[in-house]
Image (cartoon, rainbow, N blue to C red; front, side, top):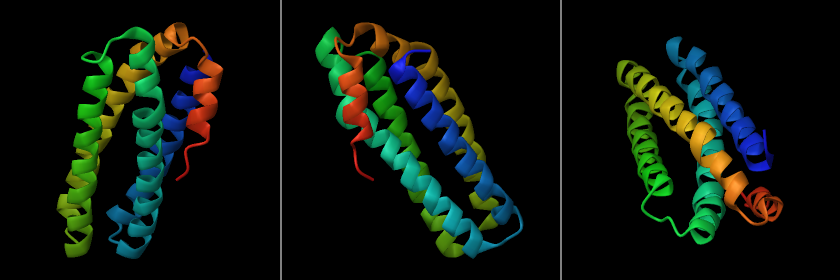
Length: 145
C-alpha cells in the first residue's frame, strides 16, 4: 500500500472505531456518554474531510486535470455526511434514540461505501498520479483540527 493510500485508509479505520465505540452508550440511552463519543467522531471525521478537500483533492485535480470525476463524487458524499452530522445534533438535542440509531446506521453504510471507493480507486490513483505524493501527504498531516 502506498503512502497516501496507507495513511488515509488507516485514518478511515480510526474514524470507524471511534464511531463504533459511540454506539454502545447510544444503545444504552447514555446521552452524555454518547454525546462525548459522538463529538470525538465528528472531530475526526471533519478533520479527515478537510485533509481531502483542502489538500488531496486539489492536488489530484491539478495533477490530472480531472475535476468532474472521483473528487466531485467524494465531495458530494462529504456533504451527505455533514447532513447526517447536522441531523444527529438534532436527535441528540431531543434525545430521540430511535432517530439517532437510524442515523448512525445510515451514516455507517454511507461511510463504508464512500471509503471503499476512496481506498480502491481514488487513493491508488493519487499515489500513482501525484508528482510528489510525499509532499502532499505532509501537507495533509499538517492540517489542524
